[in-house]
Amino acid sequence: MKVWIPHPAGRALLGEVPPGVTVEVAEHPSRLPSEVAGVRFWVPPFLSGVDATALLGRLPDLRVVQLLSAGADAWAGRVPPGVTLCDARGVHDVGTAEWVVAAILSQVRGFPAFALAQSRREWAYDRLCPTDELAGKRVLIVGAGSIGAAVRARLAPFEVTFTLVARTPRPAEGVHGVDELPALLPEADVVVVLVPLTDATRGLVDEKFLAAMPDGALLVNAARGPVARTDALVAELATGRLRAALDVTDPEPLPADHPLWELPNVLLTPHVAGSVRGLLPRAYRLVAEQVRRFAAGEPLVNAVSDGY
Image 1 (cartoon, rainbow, N blue to C red):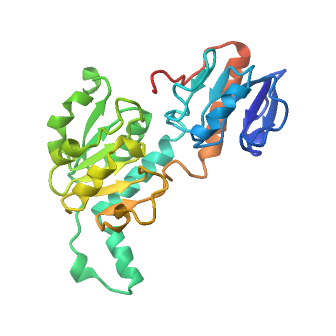
Image 2: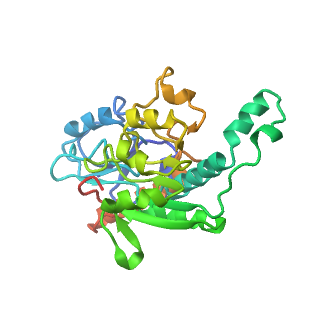
């Protein structure tokens, strides 16, 4: 069988493959390495959008689509019957969790304001100090999956308290249900959003969500842009009542004239949380295991169901 991967470096990272498996590099859906017949396992390029899904109808022998992203929103519902869609759950835990911690510390300690002062050669101690601090903060993590667990582990040494929220409550683990958010948001100093984009989570962060957050609270979105309503974000953040750190926006890329760029209480990065140097080695360890499982007729891991 043929396995298509998107990176030339992936050949070496895969290591030895099972007998009968041929690995080919398909860096872009418009530039295919060979005939489509016999391709049973496809790894699309990282962060492929809806355009890449058009190739699905041209692969008659396809049985597995293994994504390199943690989210499957561009692919869910578009994969033909008989094809298993798998995400890269676990691969992005380190990178995304590090970004969340860095974003929180940056906003809490006022780094963007200090960076701006540096660009002006201004010694801004009297104007910008004292800053806030992370110790003692109440952190609400919305999305208690593997990335949420990684964020919690990295924030724990900072002497914060945690509340976790998931789609389904897990009382034995202290995890609340998403329907409890109206009562939990007013008690949170930092709200970290890590949910996948599904029909249920689209627009989750809306006017009511933001209004329930206390004055001075920090919203961190490392999920997907459409999880938050952009018009609601702009309206609330423009008042200066809340702060935000956003790795994702709706739309992406954010237009140059968008009002979010101008807000001093907003830290923006261009969807980079998972784009770290360790991504490919971690990703291809997962791909190698999935290829081995598929060739052996074993169940695959990270199979996507209902967008999760």
